[in-house]
Image 1 (cartoon, rainbow, N blue to C red):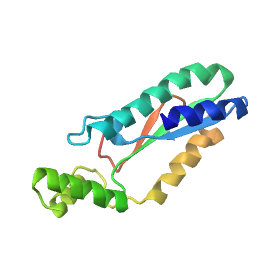
Image 2: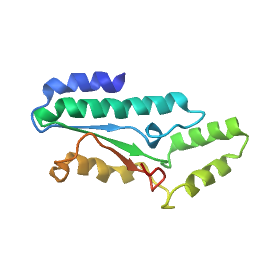
Image 3: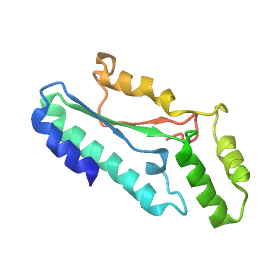
Length: 142
């Protein structure tokens, strides 16, 4: 609901040509076991983004979402620990499985996303709206 309320509050302040960028997740594009509430919330962000992209397009406002994959962060440690506990596998195994699922093998950090947000906010993305762009080292290809 936070995404909805912040967007609703910001819209009266935006002029023609504005940009709205959301952060979703690759888990908003697939069904992830053991994380149904999180996955559902990210599906909702993507659906909301697509709907308002259509609504706001006539006003020249572009709306997109960035869908990060696994990012080396404290949250990753919490997620892998939770998955390890739920599956009975070691946390290192969970991390290895996640890394193996990506086409690009180097770890990603939060700052690796900055250029994507800057691009989507720039004139170079003038004809991009309603898109959920994966930044995930090739983990999810849809």
